[in-house]
Length: 86
Image (cartoon, rainbow, N blue to C red; front, side, top):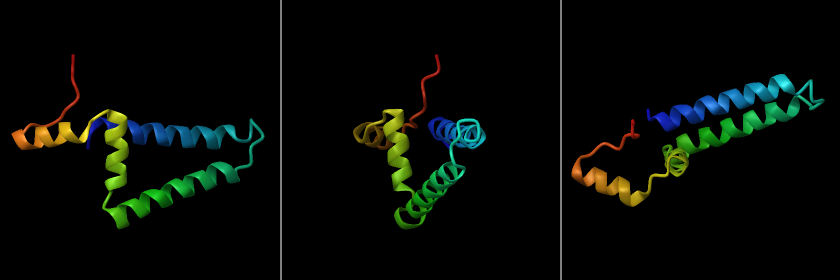
């Protein structure tokens, strides 16, 4: 799993947990964070079963700034795309 995917999952879990914890303080109904969580899990499930996870790959590639031509070039030359360390 790529670093961008792990960061996206960590940010999502943190934001959902924070919204659930702060909703009573901000006088927000607990229905709102719960419904957002159910909606996002439903979309992820639909993407996984119906589109074999292509939507998640597009989202991660968009957030990582990787273009299709870069991926095709790297795949053609046998390179593995990895984040720069330095």
